[in-house]
Length: 320
View (cartoon, rainbow, N blue to C red):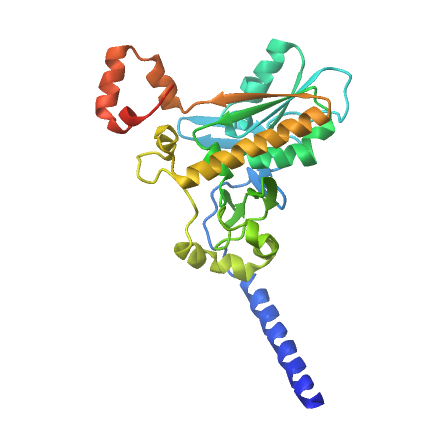
């Protein structure tokens, strides 16, 4: 018996040593993806990613070149003291709030501050969904003791961004947003694990998924294997039959994945509202429609009919 246990122990030690050797070797390999964001963003273990704290540089894009400077939290804003006697608004959102295409004086939060004559704090990052905005408020946003929290919701991508697999590629590695699942009507945070995370199965495997998500963040082997894994287990999505995914928002009945995304987004906003009110503040929600819907609504009747003739899918949609 002692010899058997000794043999098993030796085999386990050898296996662990081999795995450690493979992991060490994988860290010397080139990252599995080409970088997409340069120095503008940094991975974050709880939020997925943020702007790079204290970033200062120039962003070039189609038709613009913009000098940028982020504060200590990676937001397109100056730093604010933790406490203030002045009324405060905390603006949560995604690219509409981060606004990296314009100077800070032209951002939405600064324009609102100028109009209201009160302090407005920017707390939005490119590609964030309401899940990340809720987590940011829980961990950092409430510390600035806002009187009002203003949540900017963009229907064009926020529902999709709340589904498992929302990602930003930074320095050749995929940085995944955490996501929420509704488990017995309880909003449950989960760490994304490539190949294992789906809304319709997460509640029964919370410990396993969070463990695999932690492993992805810390294992070079897992990250190197990821392209093979996701090739066979693509991300859950909706609107694949349409020219643009947001078209599915206006077609009835909604796809199952879209319905799940709606439920999660509504739950995150409800949860945020409860926490904001418990902190003695108030929550306002701004709904931003996709630009094509706004432009269509502004057209005269004849031009609307011409647009619908050229885009028959919108003829089935409820844009009210």
